[in-house]
Amino acid sequence: MVEASSDTAPAPSQSRSLLKRLAGPSSTKAGLTNDQSDINRIIAEASKGSKYYENEKKKDKELTERIKRLLQTQNAATKEADLVQVESTVSHLLIELESLRDTSQIIVHIDADAFFANCELLYNPDLKGKPFGVGKGVLTTASYEARKFGVRSGMAAFIAKKLCPELILLSIHPQRYSDMSKKVMAILARYDPDMLVASCDEAYLNITEYCERHNMTAEECVSEMRRIVQEETKLTVSAGIAPNRMLSKICSDKNKPNGQFHLPFNSQAIKDFMVDLPVRKVPGIGRVLERMLESIGVTTCGDIFTHRVSIALLDKEFGLRFMLQTYLGIASNVVRPHSREERKSIGAERTFHPLADKDKILQKLEEVAEELENDMTETGWAGRTVTLKYKLDDYQVFTRAKSFERWITNKTGKELLLPELPLKIRLIGLRVTKLKDLKLSTDSGIKRYFSGPTEQTSPRKKRKISSENHQDVDYNWEDCILLDGDEEDCETLEDELLSLTKLASPRASAALEGAVPPHECKPVSAKAAGKKRSIESQISCPLCGEELNTNDNQKVNAHIDFCLSREAIQEAEGQSPDAKAKSKSQANAWSWFLDPKTKPRSKGK
Image 1 (tube, rainbow, N blue to C red):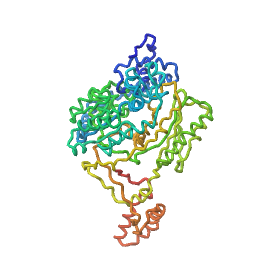
Image 2: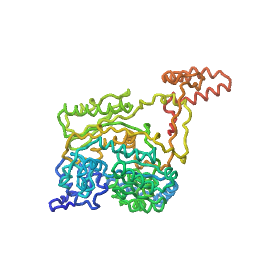
Image 3: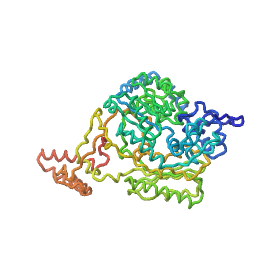
Image 4: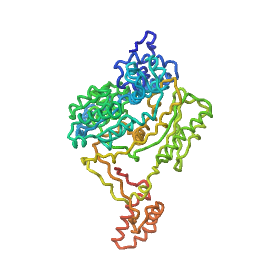
């Protein structure tokens, strides 16, 4: 274990929060020591004087000011509010949320142990028992032996070397991880073909029906699952068994590596489990929210109840509903693959040594644009808004966006960057939003309103466990590892490894890109997805009854426009009362099509 020398003590101006911030977002990884104060001081000393250090220091100061304003708001609200009434309102909300608790589903979160590192061990067994990391510039993962020294994912290699001089650094081998990930996911699909792939090394499964069908307990099922994964792949996975996804993810970290944890499925046991849990362990609570909660006295989930009135008064900052759900341990237990409809954006970015030369910067932009164009072509997307993201050599991040009147799939972004030059940058990214699904050929436009209603299946209806229902995951590793060489800086995990979300599948990437902010989430019960609407090649116009060919969307739209034209409706006024009423009803039914403001909301699946 690393010992801090006397000259590594931070300067008086270094705050505890800054030391913690410099430690990075992966400081809660399994295998790290509980007391990381000495390690954090070494990281701070190694970073001191760098542009990264100055940028983190600036962010820490800005957050301190934000917290100061937050506390002023809290004090003002406390003086003006009827605290008794606020507490009563919160109590009623707690009762309402408790009534939504659903413990009927067995949700499992499977997380591979140090996935990249263990994949490397398969090809180089001599590494067993030695501290090593994967990645030459920024580490993508570290072995459990290295984690004992404080080495973790998202850490710069030079800092990792200071923490562990004996650390062995390995190059990234994307194809190896891709192949092994596919094998692991194929095994998991035997237990739930509708599993939710969260990343290349983790997934959520609903094993309720599998356990019922095979007369197994959840513990037995998960133990068998983990054993088969190890036998067939030589890799180990850890698992969490709980009534919902949030709890199962937290539980999967309890007995790492190569272990499992089963949380009892009753309300009191769940609340007892949550009461002492640090809020940082809750998915959706990061370093910034953790520190803001700490400023009002909330460090554990049990503190949420103690300070429920303060959180209610600061609802806009924290999200009262989300925080109370966290305290109760209530979250969604829906497990299903992400659909294409959920995707909100598609993007690519590249990190490199700081560049100031205009031609070299534009070359990097060209590479990113070409990668994005290929992704959009292969996956069938077009978009109307392009956002350029660039990070300066001092780690400041800027974005520029432009919207187009046409759908775009080709390379773009140069016009957004040129006005900003000259710059010295170390990251370029492009993202396209306001997407259009080019794979929707028949189920699009006005034609989908002629189709029959979506057939819903019962939430309790048993799913067929067969390999035919499982869709293979398509991996695109070459486009995921975007680091162009070693970097002598401590980049954060979110920025350096953002592209790794592609490793699971476009569906997994969509989940992260279109994620709902934690305080906007509501607990949901498991529901089966409805079947796609069936589209007939010939349909009848609901206004005149004429047969229309659905293969020509423009003609269908033109025909509906004609039937709804002012002249046609005026002519209908001369009909009999019954016919007039029918014509008026039909016109009202389609008025939303003429006026987008009145368009009804889609109910979705």
